[in-house]
Structures are given as C-alpha cells and as structure tokens.
Image 1 (tube, rainbow, N blue to C red):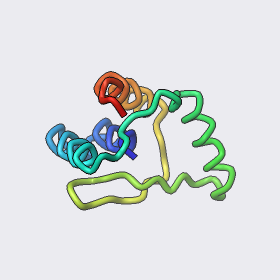
Image 2 (spheres, rainbow, N blue to C red):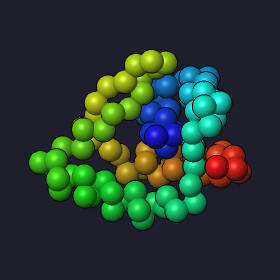
Image 3 (cartoon, rainbow, N blue to C red):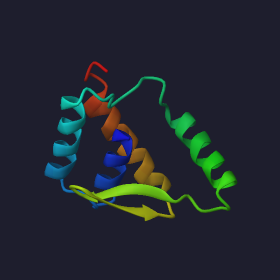
Length: 96
C-alpha cells in the first residue's frame, strides 16, 4: 500500500507533504510500510499476473490527495522503478 503512495507521488498525483502525511499516518497506525521481500522482480511478476487476470487492464487504485483516490489503467516502467527506489531508500530503515 505504501509503495502505491510513492507511485502516486512520482506521477505527481500527490505532493511531497501529502506523501509524507500518508506514510506518517500509516506508521502511526502501526501498518507495515516496507518489506525486504518486495523486490522489483516481484512487482513485475505481480503486475503481469494482474494484467493477465483483469482482461489486460491494470485498474490500479492510486491516491490523488488526502482522502481521495482514482483508478488508473496504465503503469509507466520508469515511474515504477523511480518510485520503488525512493520507497526503498526512504522506508527500508523504518523497522517494519
């Protein structure tokens, strides 16, 4: 869930402040925000499986502001990579 916050931020759907507020809320609720087993390879496999089982449309819910979200049907590879690396860089040391 927190990775999608980073994807939304990378796509300019969230400001830096909104991204940080959402992550801080998740941490405050003791929700996991990062896991070492979530690799880029696993993400690619998961997205591929999602496409296969959803008639070729990702239907990816992404936050578009605090308390708002929209469904997106596309995922840019570069955006995913940038979001993943930023997510890992910022949250790998979060302890959960």
